[in-house]
Image 1 (cartoon, one colour):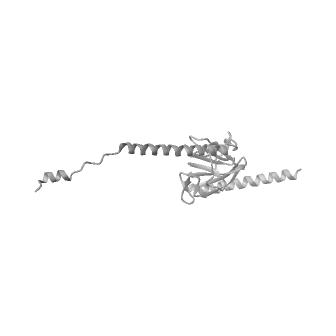
Image 2 (cartoon, helix red, strand yellow):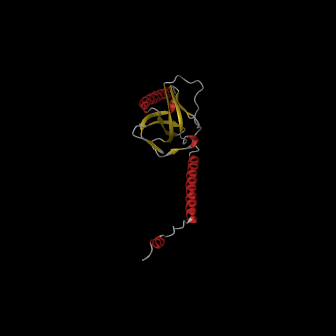
Image 3 (cartoon, rainbow, N blue to C red):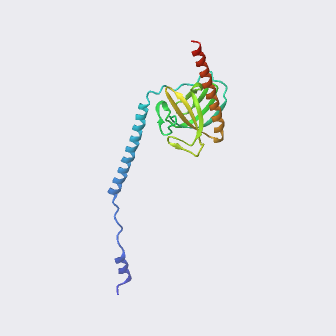
Length: 198
């Protein structure tokens, strides 16, 4: 009869040896892949910016600011070609997400962005506003985004904002649509009167 200690010794096996070289190779390979994907994304961003290089400089807010109609604190989520929610615009800093302070006056919409380029949308350039659920790179529940449509150069642009208090969105849609309608009616009347005077 075999003594219990000898049986125990025969039953024990050495632990498998860790293949450190294989593990290190996998980690290095994964890091190289991640860096490569990041580089591709960065190059794609720069390429898109070059394609959109014809976009004019963004207007600045007038020095003599009018009385604010509405103000809002929230986030700027980006801009796209109007009606094409995945066609992101990155030129002139419009692709940079940031905090945003919005002020609406009779002169237009002032967008102040800490850490990113501010811009101003003149009232004559406003084309309307609506509630939506998504813009390139950001999807929220239905009505979670305030989309402002405006014209800059020869492009119509959709810019997406989200207030810290989403209950403010409907008032902004109403005020922006009212201002854009008023401005478009005024400019059409002026154009007709000018044409008639010739």
